[in-house]
Length: 367
Image (cartoon, rainbow, N blue to C red; front, side, top):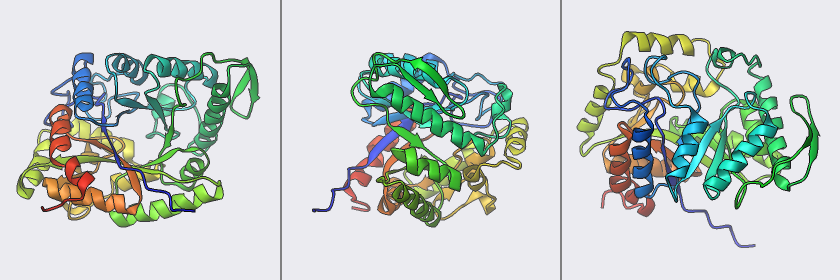
């Protein structure tokens, strides 16, 4: 049989539900996450031709002081889907908070409202104390079993509009029914993580394994480990990469912009993030916050953002050619989808779309 042609890369953007601005880690965002502002981000990304938008899930603000305004994920995604026409939404969901029978109805409704433009980023883990904050007491290891049963229930409920009884250790549905099901194709499932539990779950259930950026050798090892799990499950792997970008016309300007981004960070925010990350069970989070001199993880990788931001806290820093070259190196490892962001998100969505993505698509670096 002929070798299957590799798909063209997909480039997506990010919805900053914590707030936005030219500086991060301040007590309050320079641009609060109002619906008006988030709509501007989304409409800009759609205009620039991005494939999708990742909307994270948070229970407190994860970029500024934790009591700063935060846009709730599902409500925000629903409102934004209603004012767009083409761009997709990758919505982060934490199993264990909403009954899967009800959630299957919610996701089906939003799929139909958006003409099939939603996918689901299933997030089994979470930073320390996050689940307990809302009264959900599930051990870190048990969360993967909960997530797998959650996905299994959704698949069954969406298969056809008929009553099902679905009883597992963590899911109890009797004569549950979803009609109509999702529009067009069912939402794709994206899963992240770097632990054996996370990769095993991804191998069995993920349409795309989504990794936070690390140095190339670490991502290569992660892809090799994940590929074995996909093979064990008899499934074809697909990989995505989540990263921030700091792009300027010169290298020195790019590194100056990185320093400026954190120049007004508040001590209270820095301390909140340190306490949250201390002793975390999340393998990926430990990698993001690892200590490096001047936060330099490599020639073009900088994890200074991790000092004030939960979850992905590493950026590629450089000129358009340098950033594109770095993205192409990850592409060569097997990455087919890139979920990007930059501060502020409106201006940087345009800059990346105009200056970086054409270089990645063409491979014309330095020409």
